[in-house]
Picture 1: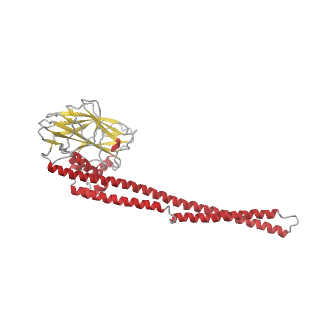
Picture 2: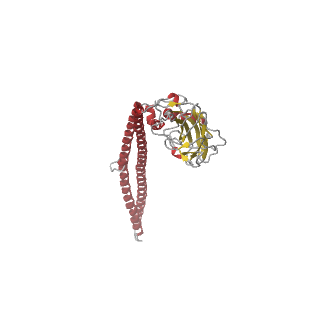
Picture 3: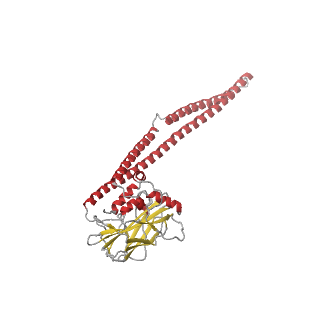
Length: 427
């Protein structure tokens, strides 16, 4: 069987999205390493996942269209809330007219009183005074009616506006859901396409690469807590524990980070770099997660790679995990690599946090924290030993450990979050 880390990366990315996780993988019952409990998803499973993602996307589009129609309806003259506003305005207009007329009646009544002459009889004076009193009472009632009608207009308009705000918010949420569903569907389709391509390649390629547990990769100096806005150094040691020289060894580093929920990836806020003894220039780990080859690595020898991890100040408190592995390729065509990815978990503390003295991250074959997988970094004062050749992995090379890495990633969000909730995290 051919092992290919690059394919497994795409598979892992697709199957850890929430909609696909339910349809492709069973839930974890305990904290056993994922590599021991999960198998690489089959093409049939990925086809099922892709179909589920398509259904989820179609449903999201339908929900978005419904939300848009609901918002548009609130601008229609026949909408009940719009009609209620217009009705309230009509009542208020009538009340305003009545108040104007009542106020004018008061003015006229006062004029009549003022117009009385000294020759006016007592009856005429009483009648004029009574008319003024009645006009003033009607004017007060008209003013109260107008105030009440105006309040009804405000109430009806507020109800209409609140409904429009709620509908607009719902449309925004639906649009976001559609975007996420489209990304999930795209990832699922790409994973399926890559799996089919990989299956075709495995049927055509020659000699298989083999697992080699004696080729080890160990991280030292990576803190168990990294504060956002800081840069930390650590070291990756690659050791050839066999009795034969490995002509070319490719170190592999793969880092993923999420917020504290374990659901939202923050990989764009973490950056991983490495450097060699022959160069002071720091190089960014690319999207294939390989560094330049160590060539050769003799039997029993090791090479140390300087690394550094930078976490942006904008990163929220969360979780991270660094996976390491290695592949070897010999001039005679033999090849192999670590059968498992070794994971080093660490916490991300919010910028400005003082975590105090912290221990180094401990190794363990574990699963990444969420739906997306991406690099991080760290460094050590010891340089790479051996010659680093800038060859990189060829397209037909066997790429061993991420096959188990894909299995590690499937369903891994649940495992990682549960463990972090038990141990707690810095905020």
